[in-house]
Image (cartoon, rainbow, N blue to C red; front, side):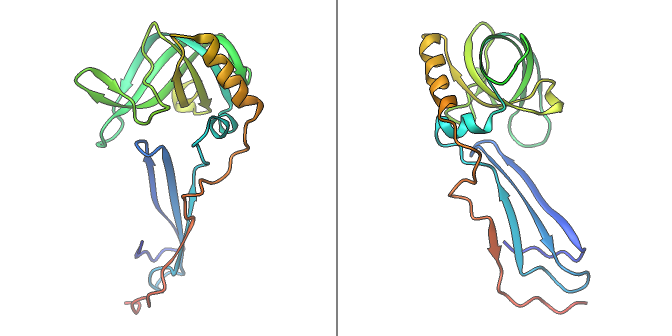
Length: 192
């Protein structure tokens, strides 16, 4: 990816790729007036392919019952937005969650309501139970949902699944599919 910036340090891009379940940002370093940088450094979110990966990244994991939808926020021109839900904690599996939480999550909107943005990220519906993994985010009161899996049909099995994942959680590590350094070997154009 080539960027043409002339400031000392430029924050080049911030993108939340909810459909891919990842986010990245890039910083570019180049002295003013010397053309684009030759190397761009990117940071990727941790791997989230397994329950153990997800459990390692989430600060709080709990079996919850969704009490109500608080609001839906469309925060940009991109498709979808943030669904904010009030939930009651039925069982704490990791962390010290209070009895009631207000949490946000990324959703897509369709004719039937809200659609998931990835397989382990179900939109929370009032009256249903889920196991949710939450990371801190002050914009959404008690946090942002890192994952949400259904627990209605068998809460005991869902709790056992995530208890097992917490017991074997893996510390956050970069997604192996993420290439965090991109080198551009082209010759920078002369400074104007």
